[in-house]
Length: 368
Image (cartoon, rainbow, N blue to C red; front, side):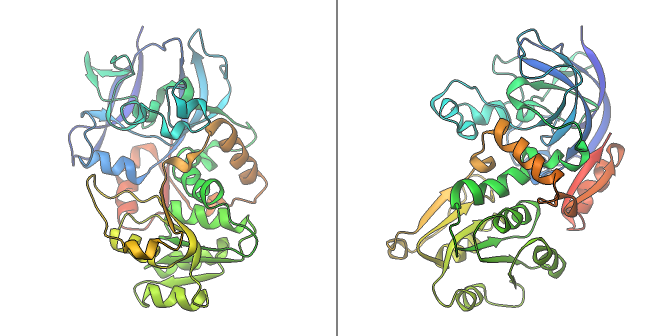
């Protein structure tokens, strides 16, 4: 029997979100029905809604959900009705990367999460008036009052922590934190530069402040975000609208360059500047995603000093251990995620979209 709920549907590329009555399929063996409490709004949602990726529309997006389990399929063992959960990406669980603890690089990641709109077997999870909608977005499609969630998207969390305060952990925050902790791994005295002070970049700043790095540089073009970066742990800031980035970073590092750079802007010109600013044996982590097919020119001889350029998806995190650790840091006040969040009623999703696009909200969180 299908499950009625209300969802924010994108009818076609570039169309607004519209609230609509939809039906969820009954949960399969490895699925759960989750009553949503909160869900973050991410630039990936906006990119897909704008028609930038071949996700089937009309469809239901949303991939930073948090809620309470209402029902589970017969083969689900990790959660039970009543459990509080954060929702993240899904994966097959059986390919080499999944078995090796790197599910963000699952062999079937793209169709399962970003562009397929269906379960792995091709069946639909959401319908409207008998017609299938694009769903199963990141295994969850959480822009809805209830979501049918893949078991591998579910992460059980501490019920004492308000779900609205941790919804963004499922994507943006774990991406920024994972860039620092799982890839850069700063050692004592390291210099970390974060290019872009949005939700992912500020999460990287907070993560760097919890490492032995002693110089943490935030770069942006918005003064208010740079001030917030200082409060969250940056030791230096650069306003790229007022200063030459290369000169500023050379001055801060004494001409030695940065040990690690996190590039979150998706601007290939900024990426190139970040690579040029690396120290010998330094690493730049590419997080920001420009349109498919975008290329960047690099000075090959400049790379021969041991520089590395590493692409990253979702922090290269194993969610069931990584996210609960982040929840504990939020609970203890060591990861002040609330400084990034602006709350909106679910019915005001289009206002949240406008505020995010205008730079008024760093991380909108929709409340149900």
